[in-house]
Image 1 (tube, rainbow, N blue to C red):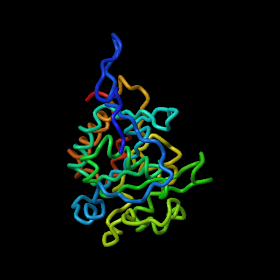
Image 2 (cartoon, one colour; image 1 turned 180 degrees about the horizontal axis):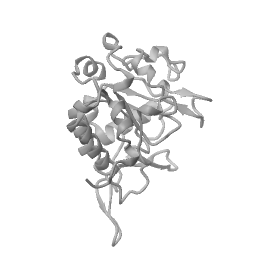
Image 3 (cartoon, rainbow, N blue to C red; image 1 turned 90 degrees about the vertical axis):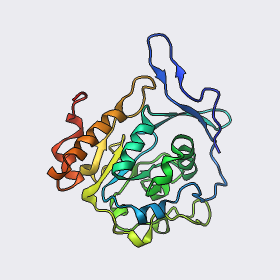
Length: 255
């Protein structure tokens, strides 16, 4: 379990600046981590949801910024401004999934620290084991997220990395009874990396990387973009059609 650092919570910035976002002290790597996703009941959420449009969220660089590791292996983590408001909004209108290329213990840690209540309503949570990797699992390597795995019933049992932390137990990353629940046309990947979205660029909403801790309104901007879609949904046959006809890169900052 991560501990809040002394700098947790909102802090005043220097004169003339904004405010630093909510921050926590993220846990050190866990060599003996056990695959036990106990906080969320994602498979049940997926089986029960009435939403047919899926928002797939990246974590680090998109919703969260992680600092360098300290001598004890821990690091500071910062929530992107307006994160809670944004999550509440999309959970009301869409099915929501997290897919991060981080290690599973890091994903679990970030979910607990920054969206502990909201993540209990997610339909799936995927980590590095579900990604396509060009190199060594524990090394720096090109990482790709193939959205066809979501539509095709892919589970942890299909991953070549399923036994990285010993025999996997419990959550397999999918509700088997609804494996054909999602279609590519009604799926949006929100990620700050073009490389990770290279296989399905039409589905990719390329959000800016979260760098500026004091002046960032990207999630509010994205919420407005999605609200326009919700208000005009009957004009588009699916979510990808909206992405194509109303490109994110051309969406005005003020309406």
